[in-house]
Length: 111
Length: 115
Image (tube, rainbow over all chains, first blue to last red; front, side):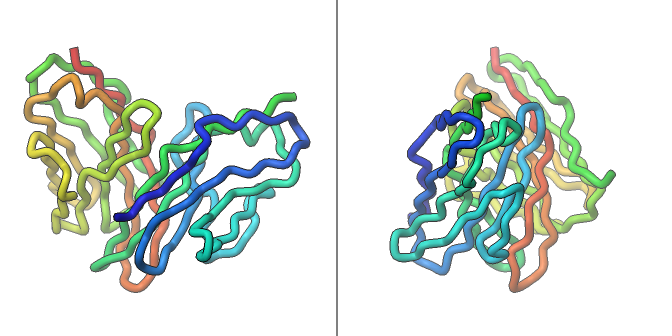
């Protein structure tokens, strides 16, 4: 069965510290992995996707198929990074796509 | 701005009283989704429309129905809400094109309270 696991409900760091938000997935097919973010009082929005291999707002994530992981990293956290982060597994079938979300990790960056 | 709009933002209903949540989009996307998100849990896909083609998730209760009268609007109907249906309901849209995954755009959600 397809599943996304985010083991930490809350990650609390100080400004300038490195951040790693963990995500593991279970999927028998070829995975497409995403990170979505929800800032306070804003809607859920895409942060980055593994196929783009890009850095967004200083965040990067590498897909590790051997470890079935897609951890989100940032070398120096900023206060504005405080938000809820959701890892998601994408499956495409028949002209539409489906996301399976993890339960989310709340990142709190303290001054 | 092109966007996904959900009304109302907060909905209170009584146990067993039918309720309808609304979603509209100005993105002209083919696909519209409804997710249920309970407190501290992952958003869970209930069903989605690809144009007029309705696709129900296998574990979505029969109590939940959906209508899409046109490209812009999609409704979530809960026929007999129970206390366990209290949740945030998220609407999302995406372009439906073959061979590639497309970003989903989310509305702000409707928080449903069942008394």
